[in-house]
Length: 377
Image 1 (cartoon, rainbow, N blue to C red):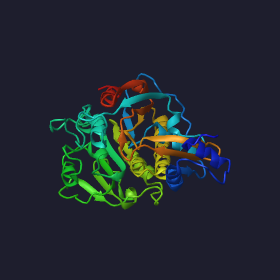
Image 2 (cartoon, helix red, strand yellow; image 1 turned 90 degrees about the vertical axis):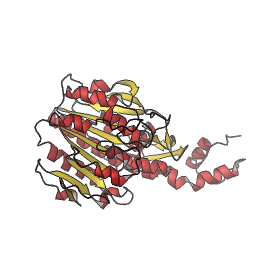
Image 3 (cartoon, one colour; image 1 turned 180 degrees about the vertical axis):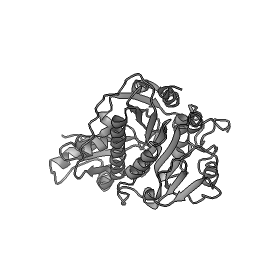
Image 4 (spheres, rainbow, N blue to C red; image 1 turned 135 degrees about the vertical axis):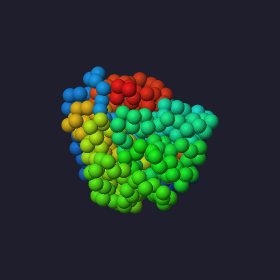
């Protein structure tokens, strides 16, 4: 008698079985009912960028750092993109790989607020805390430290500009949902460019020029910009298109004019949303969009020769397990164990000078100190 488990059910479908005799009627019914959200077949594949590796791993301080954070993006999420793109992913062209342990100060399972505060400050903090330590004290953040060396900062997200991940690089609040207070912390913050959706509480920030389109950002390096664009907040399935790549390129074009260098954090925010929704098509399409942006960062790093690219996540979302797939068809199927975050360590990929700093298994706080070391600070 054949096994009566979920792995077998996938195989029966491949065999085009018409009827399945099961002792697990409710489980099989649920499995079939959720198939549209637990499987995906990609369209036309794109060709990943082929890095030159000319400066990869050389021991020389960098001028620029590009940190790309796939919110909620663990190895399983990345592999959905690799499979759907028929065996190709820009991220997998990066040779230096490490693992980041993501637990927060007060919880084995982190949320995004302490997850990225670790990157921006080098400190563990409590769940829901943005840019403060576990006692609520404001932490020195990476953009402030870099500003002392005249290195400019840009933040790009396909989520809300007051969400935890971008906020961790400019705000100091014990509650991540306090959007109006978080946005007030932009006053005096050394953020040259901030792009995303939301921004309903933007006021009393005369130092910034606030626009509603990436295309409206000028190339005056002495001006500070906030872009709040509805397009940014849409999912790929709902028509966001190439917004993330355009926003990244605009930020790159502007900050490249700053001779001392730049730091750009770009977030693929909505991989996390798909994980929370237990929606595999949502996850895959967001991973592919994030990966295209990574490809553009790698291309710039090769052209520039003084740029370090880091790709990681603040945590994994959904407890995703991959159970079926086809590279030739771009088909992937899997199951989620939760609609929340997990404590699974996440990959860290690095490319460019001093990329070797990111090898090994370490706490997420080490990303901060190793970025400073890459700059020679």
